[in-house]
Length: 329
Image (cartoon, rainbow, N blue to C red; front, top):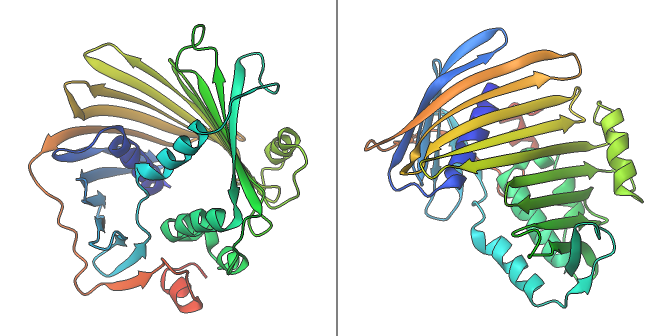
């Protein structure tokens, strides 16, 4: 758990600003009841991570794939998507006619919508699975997608906008995936001048009303009804430093958990920041993890070592032998 959330923090910081140099992130994670020291050396092409006496490495490869693992064993993941993926969707939305919105009329008065065909949704799904193979641990999603193709709508993307004279820079994106080959998925992301709100809901059950489905998932923490991630950010830029607060709540993971982090970043040097984070089990009202991290710019470069490591290629799915090698059986 501690490694997962340290990785989340590191990736979030990488997304905040391009790395002109290398960032050295150090701190302590206390996973109740065991503490551990953290050290991350991250550039725009590679990273080294150590958690007490355990080390992990990662590096982008010339073919765009990503290797992550130890000196003994590593997994090859699909390439990280670039900004053109989202920009292409926004460009297509810009070309659509604007209609009067009646769903969120109290705030979002206008909307634009596009539909995504089966072959496009399949490609997006396969890209996501190649980057996060644990989403398809048993290979059933990749098998269900098969050779699916065609123009049948499998998803929709709608952008809602508020009156810019009253609510500047206020908009929301609503993504609905209703493919017969994939779990039902809804992603909502809303942004205004103060921060953002988001919700990701996923279920294998039939969906007739997403609001009712989300309530059912929240009431069933086992995960059999699905999973929900809900969160928000708040941003305050004083001109000298930027304060960002992020909070995420998860439902359907065996218990309701909440992860929150405060990040203070020097505006003159975006690679210089400090962060504190906590994770709580809200179902039983007990702490799970706390952490304090800080970052500085350094000249040292990561040196990921994979010479002689056993490489598991997860970009095309995992077979039984590969799952056993990764301890997923």
